[in-house]
Length: 196
Figure 1 (tube, rainbow, N blue to C red):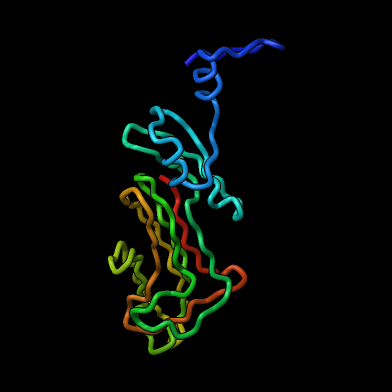
Figure 2 (tube, rainbow, N blue to C red):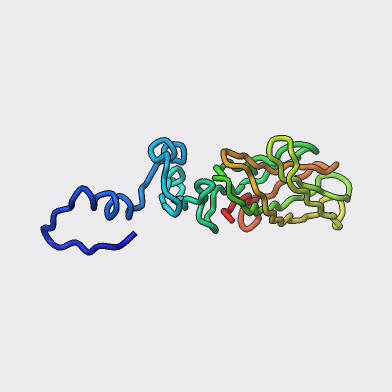
């Protein structure tokens, strides 16, 4: 599509309106569902932004591929941080505050997790799992070596290829021991989904 420099007072003809004005702008939508209903057949290479996370300081940029809309790589699609500690998270229980929801747009994502935990019982192996619903996507195991209240910080990254649509990921205590999720200062739990 060519680029045109407009002169002062120049008339915009109907033939130029779609090509030069509408075809060379970046439309803004409140969310992907509105975008899809208002712009059902965009051309490959089209770009837009969605503002569903604007209150949190995140504007998502999208590019249209032949297979559909995909978020521009490297953008945070969802993030949660846990500042407050939670004691006694039982085996099989979700870690409070460690869940995120996002729209994948049919593109691969990188999921990053940091969870400072402390076992509450005998020394042993503490384990965390990344889940979607009841499906385990990734397991992380840490041996706690320092007595009955050993401290370990789980760090994990995993690449996933979720189908287009809404997803919710969460962290669960998948080990046999109850754990404390630490919080405050630099010991915050973080779960983040990044477009890949």
